[in-house]
Image 1 (tube, rainbow, N blue to C red):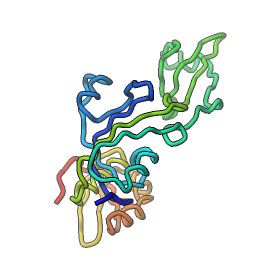
Image 2 (image 1 turned 45 degrees about the vertical axis):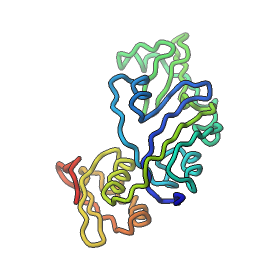
Image 3 (image 1 turned 30 degrees about the vertical axis):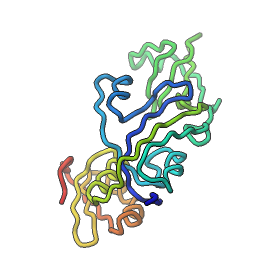
Length: 217
């Protein structure tokens, strides 16, 4: 049956710019080309919930298990380049952190990734655009299965939202999520999403040392 919005599916994917350069994959052979130390992991997403590129999720709604090649224009992929994201920074900022800013080097500032374009006169020209901004990309997608197991669904959403494998318990019509101290207010922002996808109320408990990566019944 065709997949609908909110369905969970497992996919294998490889993303490349239109000239063929691979930039992302969860297929072992392709991933090794990007990082020989990386391990391929299963990817489970809920369609229509922003867990992958919107253009890909929209394409897959209405499709079935199988292989697909999806071409995306910049506006449906990583957006267009923004000239305002090319900024000059004092070179002393780099020296204070014992960093040598050479053209082509990539650094993180305030959770933004920037690439050094040029260094001149005590200033460093940085480009904070996504490296794929302005490019047409192609994704090879293989839909492996529709995910029916509730535990798999919940775990995939938790990892996506919180970038962590927080433990949880199911009680009656509730998901009780155990999170780090100070994380509760943020986690509670997603109560409506858990209700929409699982018809379960989200209850968040802060723990000194929350257990993670455990199997849940």
